[in-house]
Picture 1 (cartoon, rainbow, N blue to C red):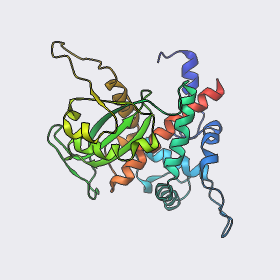
Picture 2 (cartoon, one colour):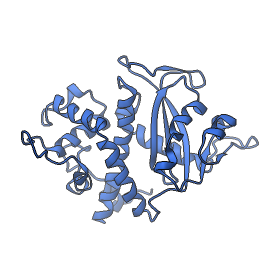
Picture 3 (cartoon, helix red, strand yellow):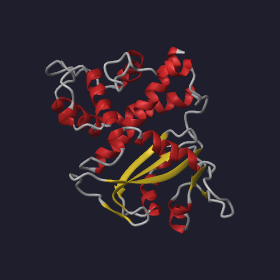
Length: 274
């Protein structure tokens, strides 16, 4: 994207309290998808918009929950809602709704017909429990983020597992019940790590391997594969995702979804304002 005075104005967030905060237009995209006030029990006093802002702050700044600024709700409240939304599927529901809206914004059908798969090995923090291993190829001890994206680079499904798990084995998790959610998928694009009978047999659709040209020298932009690499860059632009600081892999997986929720919310809100 070329930076012009007009595009800079679209992305200017200096008027907000924190650059991670949502605008009113952005929160309007999310608020209908948040849990409603319970009919029974004590009336909710916490502003869910402030809770989401606090979670976005943790994601974007990389700070610990205990280091949240005092103008957010208490960290126990924020983390409590974060965990609740993981367990009851709220993050997944918000992500899937925004995914359809974003594809519509780009003039695409709600369901993708092609997907690209790749992984990223990242170091874990000192508190990581389980799903930690060593990636001998990348020389990284930690976890592996495995993602499947469409041709726009939007997330279809994330998985987080030990870095010691081979890409072809980790791909099997992504393929489980995938066509029940995305029935119109026709082909997967992948790199050479996914070549072989193991992936071809497990994949619900044909897998097309995009290989480097051995005769070419220097940097190569590979068809389709650059799209998933860009999505990984979008995710790791958030400092919390620079490495895996989470204790459990399920929390790291939730943060991947939240990173894409933040990205899609801003994209949709900019379109409303244009």
